[in-house]
Length: 145
Image: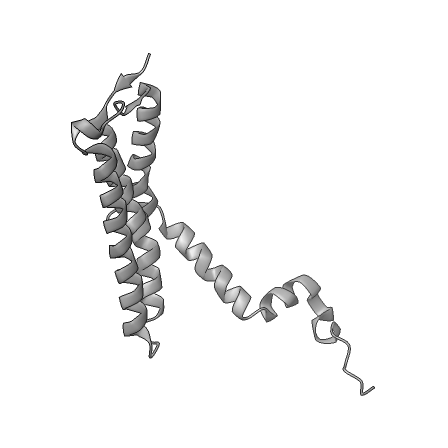
């Protein structure tokens, strides 16, 4: 049996839209914050900040307009009511509730990503740990040919 929960679905949609746009305290915020912190020393930082924050705002406006049209349009334009089974609503609520938890528990993921990025930029430690004593002699010298 299908139940109609248009207001609840609308609220859940808007919370999800805010998470996608990267507003705090939801999970999309951490990614944007890390990008903005990473470019602070770059000469193009004002441009990058403007682009990241501007596209976030445009994304939020687009998602809000789409949700507004979908959930709160005039009754004469509604063909059928928006409906979902209660189990679908519970799964959406659970996923949205996990978004702030990704921010709180995201420190481990951020630390892992930073260590991985460091290893990618400076691979000598990885190569030495894999090849051991053979590391200095692992790459044959280039010969003129």
